[in-house]
Length: 201
Image 1 (cartoon, rainbow, N blue to C red):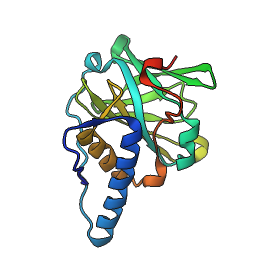
Image 2: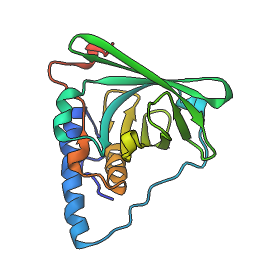
Image 3: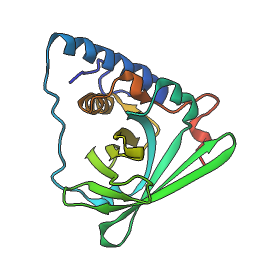
């Protein structure tokens, strides 16, 4: 697992982008010399009531993402709301070209803690896994589906505030590596002309 020398300091998404790319480059160099085992934690339990609420989507990585996609990605939020039978409804909101774009789907819990089937996703057999979270500051979320018959893997970094702590960024990078993704698959929201006080939608 790559580690940052930044200590516990927090950073904005733009700073996190450069640190994440540096960590992934370092990890690639390290992997070329050795083959370290990346241990990904598995949730032993999941508290839907604590997870619900508003999250900022501050980092993404995916098998279908490319670096140029950063300029198509505006800052956006995900709001989770607990429903009956431990289901979660997640709603997304993003400002793009002066318009508020929203979309949503329902998460139905599966046997593994923190794992859900994704309804209304338009993707057969899509699944969402909360890989790691402390509920109060960050969450790492893994999405797996097969749009058009091709496997699609996405890793989302969610934070309660508009900042990323160095140790959380380390965890994000480790999960990205473990899923076989590279720095070319990592994107962070384009913050050009945007500030947190503007909000999203």
